[in-house]
Length: 186
Image 1: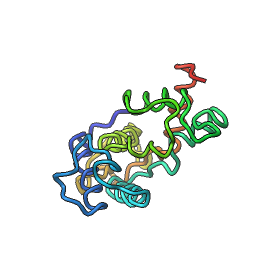
Image 2: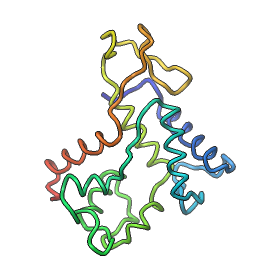
Image 3: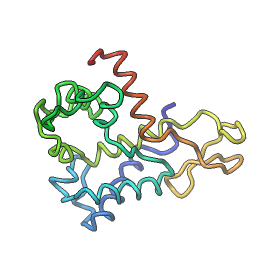
Image 4: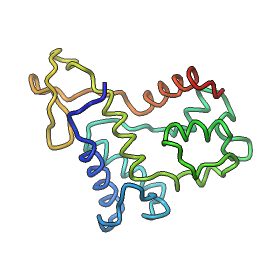
């Protein structure tokens, strides 16, 4: 179900906040299309801190593994990354579907270059996809009475139970299986 409790603008703003606070940089530098690595100087540990901040902000569990790692599990070894550590054609197709035709991705690209393609907007899109797994009714009381608590957490207005969402890893696996059936990439 596409949730409508938290507006997309609020999601983007909270992602921006997690990034500028996590990187300790001027908020004005954090634009939707900013690359976390190239434009904002993020390093691998910064991604962990930002994910933790987002989990706390929204009450969700983000993916612990990358789309590429999930591809290797779902489609088989070397389906995403070849023996030389380069992106396969299939990986590029899947990533372009996932990240709205990101043109900077090319087959043969070294996988170490991939973090440079992560933008503020792509992280916001990932959070949105998790929030969109909001069940129609509360899993505790069965009512459909969702409200926002503390500006960015969804809870039941009837019983106060926090909303339960699909975690990021399960969501990626499910999406990849849909891609496998509909796109016939592998």
